[in-house]
Amino acid sequence: MKIHEYQARAILARYGLPVVEGDVAATPQEARSIAERLGRAVVLKAQVHVGGRGKAGGIRMAATPLQAEEIARELLGSSLKGIPVRRLLVAEAVEIAREFYLGVVLDRAARRVTVMASAEGGVEIETVARTRPEAIVRVTADPFLGLRGDQARSLAFALGLRGAQALSFAPLAAALYRAFLENDATLAEINPLVLTADGEWRALDTKMVLDDSAWPRHPEWEALRDPEAEDLAEAQARAHGLSYVKLDGEIGCMVNGAGLAMATMDTVQLYGGRPANFLDIGGGARAEKVAAALRIILSDPNVKAVLFNIFGGITRCDEVARGIVAALEEVRPAVPLVARLVGTNEEEGRRILQQARLITADTMAEAAQKVVALCRGGGTSVW
Ligand code: GDP
Ligand code: MN
Image (cartoon, rainbow, N blue to C red; front, side, top):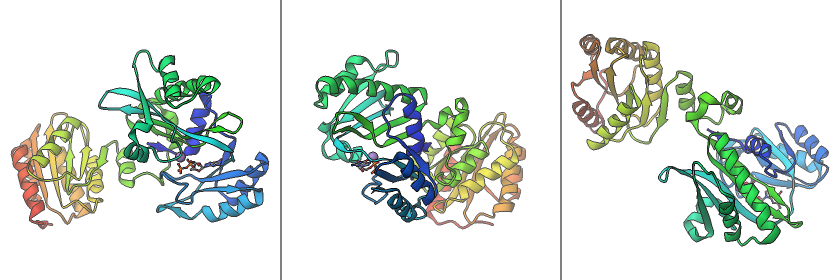
């Protein structure tokens, strides 16, 4: 889950990171009163999940509270790269001497946490990585020792910092690392991390992505959700206890079990198809859950055919089949459906599906081949 800048900065402030004074506003009047309270020039920042807000006009300076109100009126309700702006962070404006980048990311390939820094802050780090990869320095934290003091200092030196500035940089890297770890983040980033004219550090822009797999141990995350920014299908999937990830292929996949879902996607690919999603309906899925899953799959306009691959263990095939039929009556899909059901009550399950005139298959390979062929042929539904 991506969280907004104003939410990330609240978390990072608790770790001692030097975020600037400010507050979030949903109306021009609120923006004005925050600016009045701060009593100095402010920056108004659109709280939307897009990078490069500065260039897109989503970061604006205001010298007076009145101007803050005027700019807020322009920004609120407008949209930035297609996303409506509902809230603004109103923060004190900082005089920037130098801009740095500091980030903590999960390096899945190395199975380690990497701390990255660059003296070329302010621009999107992906751009720096592409154009000047040597301008990014990295250290890998040991999972048991964490980010060591010497590693944090080596980052500072690699950035060209010396003396007091190098010494004051190291604790910032340590704090960001700790915030990343303790909040189960997959990304924690400060860009830019700036040095002011007085040689003070300020975290001007903060970003965090939280690891969805860690929801069960973070009841407090519920309050961080922004339903408007969430993908509708993914939100519905969560509400029904389904794990769903949208992909960009054409074959919708409904599977019980994460491992089987992976194998199904591989098999579809093997026969030349492209999965439209990963979807695990979980064990013991009942009819309504199956119906919800089917609605979610079909809400994707790219889906040209759907493959059900069910292994009946705890989940009974007849129950799933009834779920499919119930869902079909409700959703009336315009695409062909192929089902492969094996395991508990498979005969009954298959009978129900055949009555409903679904295409069935005995093996996973056969099912994948059939669904790929139907997808290719622009197969029409029997419905
Ligand atoms: P982003 O474009 O979405 O990454 O938004 P940022 O919050 O990083 O702002 C973009 C750029 O605006 C920064 O890199 C700064 O150069 C500039 N900026 C943001 N806040 C301030 C501020 O308080 N003072 C000054 N002088 N520039 C700022
Ligand atoms: Mn930024």
